[in-house]
Length: 81
Image (cartoon, rainbow, N blue to C red; front, side, top):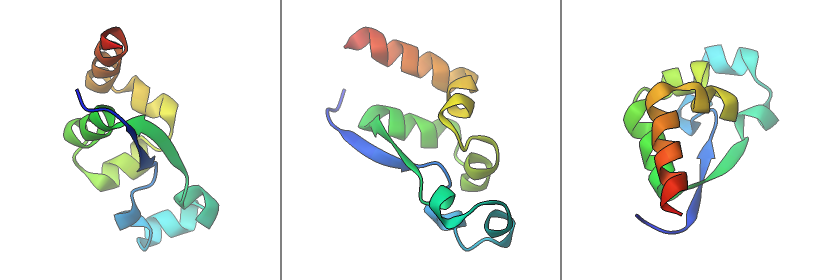
């Protein structure tokens, strides 16, 4: 396990110029981040590889934790600490 935290953009930066996202989110929402451990950040992108899907369906902590594989991984990481 790697130590430290990193910032995860709830709306991936690569989607910030996409018309669909610009219509639905204010600039402040697009720039919103959450602090996550490096392992969890890697897991987010491994289990949800599509940045478009990340922005459309997983743009909140609650939505991320509702993802079955990701919630299992987070539970496992919490046990390791």
